[in-house]
View (tube, rainbow, N blue to C red):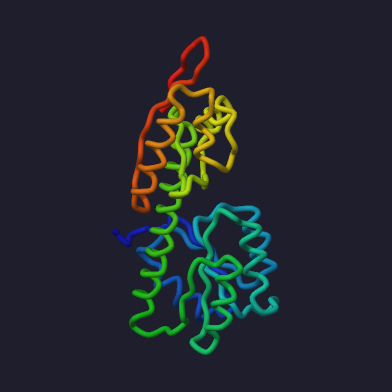
Length: 225
């Protein structure tokens, strides 16, 4: 991935002017725009007024208590990833911050490797966001599919079913948690079909795909995949 402008706008929360200057310099080439706040009071106001693609916040701010502000920022900006800055002696706080919603942490060690560490962190966060976006697109496509799609265990317990599958289950008068309840008297050749599917599921490895078709016994003789 090209590191240039990974995030177009970054909000930096850092009370030390010297540290803020070093971080801004390290961010050159990684973003188009950096907005800086020195206190949480300023930060809470600014995130409500402007849109940012990433927040970078020091863990030790003059008007904060511990890492509580991390959770508050994540609640106030749920769609904006947050990366925290910490000293090498406060890694426990960084771990707590990630439990509260921070995506990553960077050690404030302003040596020649700091920019590289900053770039790697931003790239990791960006890659994770892209993966989540693709996952959401896939889930939406699955949910909107006209085919009945379900994730089931080998024993037939249903982990997930899309809308079309739930409609099919309802037509078959099946149970929400049991895949084999599809093969009711409302389905043609239900007994033999159930045996075939049960055998196939028992032989499938984890993550494998199985496809079958069944016909509902009604005047329209509707078929479903």
